[in-house]
Image (tube, rainbow, N blue to C red; front, side):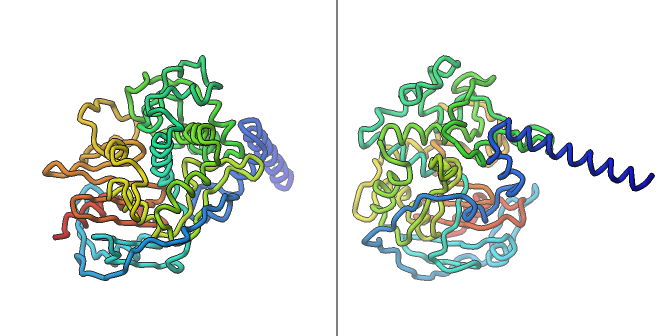
Length: 401
């Protein structure tokens, strides 16, 4: 009797598993189902799990000298609802940080590598969105795109007639499109494989996924709602407007002009589709992420070249005093003087200055603080989710003379 019961339970579990896999296949594709089951939650190992398009280093590397300087030994930052002080070195070591760089006055004054050497590429997750923003700015400067006020349907006519005809590129960059989106936090855990977070990350044909978008409940421009369909649509716009793959456009328009020291890559949805994972997929060495931050620190001028217009840097990173949007996601960020530009997370400081960051899953970070001429890069895992590295970086900059 007991053996029969175990057999029945086993059959039931097998039937449930088959039903689950079938549902995943119907939701997107067999490849999607396999990725969900094999990979589970995204992690820093994803750099090796997706195919990628290479991005060549520059033939002439821009100067970024290493000149160690004295930095505060401790840093005080908000932690679990309280002010917390900790040794900076201890914080770096206990949080799974693989690379930590501080650049001041165009010199590396601190660098810590716990995994690999300086050339090791690190995946940056949503830091890629800030690169997406830069590429939109470049495409406007190059005349491929007229302006951020262009309707998205001008480039992606397939989504016309769904209540999205007035959607602009600016809405995508500011995350206020009103496009329907359900994150994994908005439902029970067992439905996570069917949420938009998972689909826009693990989908094997992200162009097709992008073309599924539908209008949601929020009016256009009324609410900030973090949404990974936005960068996918931006990728379609960039490749259709420029006639190049997104990675090639990044290579020629930004990576090489920056004087990047090491090759990088952009993860793809699949070898068959060959579309860049616009929401998450740039892989590069820490020092070259720092160069990208320096490009923004210097208002688009770096390595002897005006790579991006100064006006674009200001427009995409500065706080908007007329911004009255409600925040449907990440509202706690507002408590620290936070705002969201064109895929850059900003923090307003006392005295009227502001810092801004490219942020990614597991606290990948490029932090730009013009008030102290500083760029901070943090890459790695997240062994303590309560540590907000953007607030750590701001506190560290606050302590600098």
